[in-house]
Amino acid sequence: MAYKRHRILVVDDLADWRYTLMGLLVDAGYDVLAADSYTSALGLLEAGRFDLAVLDMCLDETDGANKAGLDLAAEIRHRWPAVKVVILTGYGTPATMRQAMEPDVHGQVLAADYISKTQTEELVQVVWRVLRNR
Image (cartoon, rainbow, N blue to C red; front, side):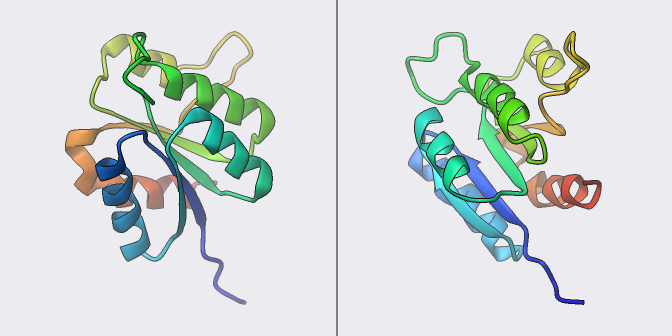
């Protein structure tokens, strides 16, 4: 049986974070593409197949509610239900964690996991666990 490389989409508006996350995942053996916005992420998702998306919660400085990543997660769950989502943020609160991880009124959970940007060393482990449980 041939080995299947998982394809991951990284979405972060900050270039330094985007490159850091991509580097961690590429070094771990994943195929990785990156987007810097909600809109560019949708374009990549429409154009190709992904197994998992790592989304920053706050996708730009004008996102005062710090939830554009959750909105993108909801769009992914609706349009590409097979794509697993991991939320990554520096702005996490208990309320946003609940929103990402608890089922909504339709029983949908937005994210398979949620981690802080201060825990990037755990990202590869989280991604491996989420993909293993597909």
